[in-house]
Image (cartoon, rainbow, N blue to C red; front, top):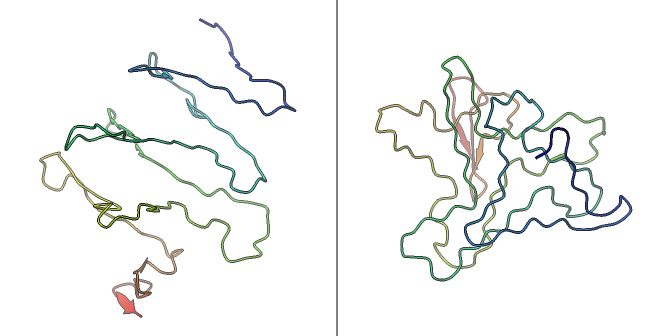
Length: 178
């Protein structure tokens, strides 16, 4: 137990040492920010990274479904569970935000993509759905809008695999172009 800030360091600032938290079998590394009402606004689990190194990764999760999994068993590399207990609050499941910068744009884009989905598996039908929206709520209209794009900042609304595009740049008009 610690009554104040608690820091774990692996080495000195001029070294490059790994810090490993190892658990075995059904063990977990737990960050408990819910034993009492949390009032922090900087993140219960906060990762801050600055880098100028090519291919630097700020957060990496390697998850392997090992041989021997029971047929039709579901395994999850990541799960975010949300529960809204306040009728007045706004709850967001995942927010990816591009912060403003003082750098001057010299190319086409600052950010290659904000949400990138890439399949490296080389077998046919390896991925059933790249994006799936479903509901087990058993309540009609429990999801108001499936995909919501409400800004004129988007130049091309949808681009298809052979280069055709679907745009709604003029109110009341859907333009399909090739």
